[in-house]
Length: 519
Image (cartoon, rainbow, N blue to C red; front, top):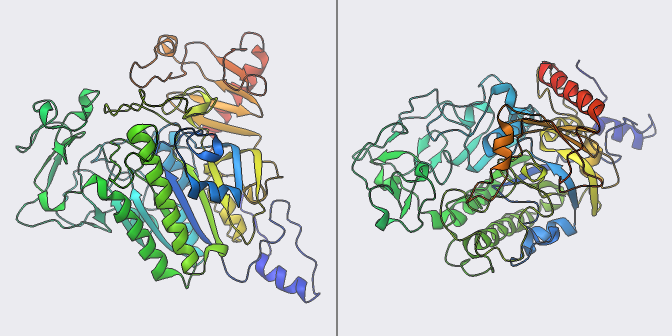
């Protein structure tokens, strides 16, 4: 059902003149009416775990720039992605709905666009309020309609779902094509050397990790990452041609920072939305030489240092343009941490006392809590009083909460899983969700401090199998699992057999959520 409300800005002005009382809408911030709409910057880090930042207890690596955001903003202790892998999380953030509604999984590098061109999206909603919108960095939500010709204009993509500007890695750093894409076109592509990509059969004559292991800088830890070698790293998929357009992984830090800061400089006189989607700290981890050796944890730790530097550079740009105080910054991650995920870069051997996922069990890919519980920080000097929040929060609610803040009504079929929690995002003393669904190979449900994991066929065998290199548990089982996180935050004691009635209630709630079709 649609809802209507008096414009917060108009009400604030009238109240100041004594004509009406200040609005008392239950989930609107007390001082949300600003003369200027706030800019919105989302820093979306890849594979950053709950414990990977200084303010969350990191050891062996320092993150002063991100820590400064937390010290002057809100640090959330129970904030979540919608899923324990990247493509579903990104989809949910931008669409305001769970990715299981699109049966979304991690996409290949040549997959079609996952978000429908007529589908409501977060950037499209913000454009209604007059925002200029941009995405910079990793995409991994698909491009085109399938069978992409990388030598022509590539549509549909970010520009067709609400972004005014995009500068992308088309998929991820470990997948071909290993090229930058600006708006609709591959950057620096020569007509004399057209590019081709294939994920089924080998094409071209480039060496591969399978055939030429002596040419790679990091040995792949699985067959999937053993295909075409680019910049000394074997990738997923095969690529032919496009030599002039190839990226150099070690240059990501400067290339993406420059693109983001240019967008800010060009739009600092109007409200803007920047979705800065990091490649760091995803594999392959190839931080620039200026960051190598800056942590005690090898390449993974150095990539965290690089990520922190990039964050500081963008924040400094906001400050230099005089817009930092009126910029809502949300810093978070797309899923929990994973140490070994395709390449042998000694992340496990060098982790030391550092706990990438804090005290939480699992990590990326897992149904356990570390799959979706991620570091989350809100920095907004004009509105946010520094503090620590224990509220249960979900990235999926950013959509509806921003719409609420900006007085934008949402349609019945828009962002159907996104709830309004504006107060909780801006005030560490306010409560968040009561219930929250978490996606992995199965579905889980948080209800307060209770956590239910839906059973899977043959799941018990998977649960007993700890991936030898990833050192993570899937969290799946053929039996229901129930944990009391207040007493057992590391999910060690399954209480499902003791509280069978609670299990049945929570399973019914999951089924009700799956059947939902409107707001």
